[in-house]
Image 1 (cartoon, rainbow, N blue to C red):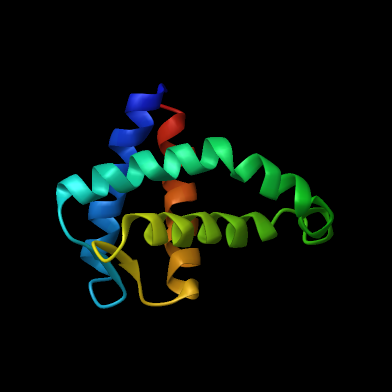
Image 2 (cartoon, one colour):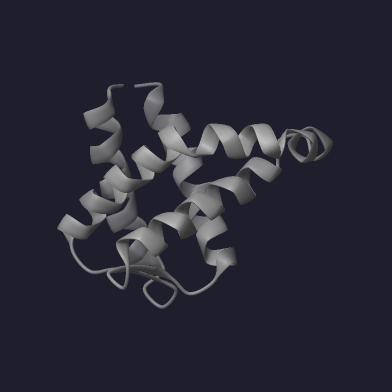
Length: 111
């Protein structure tokens, strides 16, 4: 799946997930969801490899479970870049959204 396909899928996932967690996750509009997906893709491309390298011992120690925390951090960083139009109520909510998005992306990448 190409870059544009991932942007579209992540945008749709943001909109779907915000429907389930309206009290804890806020996305202002579809345009904001697309912008957040683009920012997340850029952050995952530019910053995440360094963070994965820095946290490699912890990731090995937890058998890869720490990657969920790292994905939650990337979503929080995306929220910080976007501003008030894309917010999480807590870091735990960001980790839950990261977990849901990871599972959905694994399932959808097979198609």
